[in-house]
Length: 179
Length: 179
Image (cartoon, rainbow over all chains, first blue to last red; front, side, top):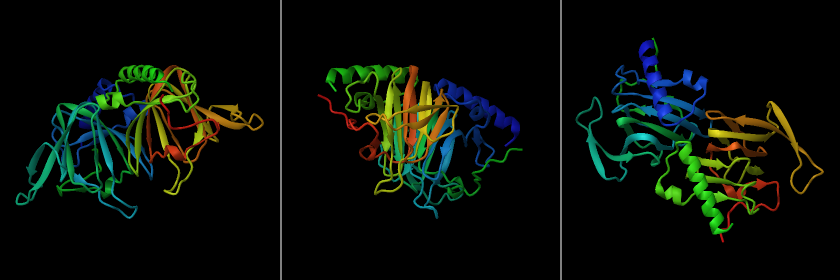
């Protein structure tokens, strides 16, 4: 990601946090994480996040999704440290749709994994508005997308081990590279 | 606690959540927990809380402290399920002071435990304003108090096991009784 794009996304996300009434320290504002998953297409695929804490027992983050922006399909498998990450998404502002493999919900979406159009996974859509939340069991395949105005979402979870995450799209790199 | 006092505290807390920009569902608004710790002195000792989730791995809550209101001295010991609760307090609105046994901080406060004026524990004050947070190690003796305007505070933690909490004041009952 180019430094200029990072800076644009950072400033845009700070405006979302402000609108959602979420106070951040100056240090947090300076160090906002912009994830483009190495796809260099941030308007469509990516998110902005602030990690409040990530100890060896629990984790809390605040996420921003721009309008229509997607955090791509992935899961959190078990690791040598134990069970996979259990995560709860709570919408604070705007609207976010979670697409969860195997979960019962109102509407289901069949989607071919990138690079493998012959195989389809059935996802169920769980739309969250402010105050609504959903808890994902460990190792559940999922993706999520910001609504027409975007979203601010709190994530409450067990320890995040990003390096262990498995993304369906083999082109994805979780750690951002800023040029 | 009398039903009328519960209802007053619930409505007052909802106004704090609103002011802090925190969206709750109607179900959450109806079921807000008002804790007076059995002391029947809610203006001075107690808090109001909404528990977003409490699984066997992690927990997230939103707390309201009215001006000058105190959540009394306690700790979260290890249980048969494992290590004691690790908790992070993040101030969202107003101001909250944490008083933490043994932690280094700007100002320390000597305080006799209730019912045992002969023994003093030294607490360190950690004042949190919006966006600031502090993580408590398991089994650390602590108490906290709302500032002059009160506070809204997010709590991110491992599993809450209220029944295992040890309060210094032997008169305290953690589970509220509403008449």
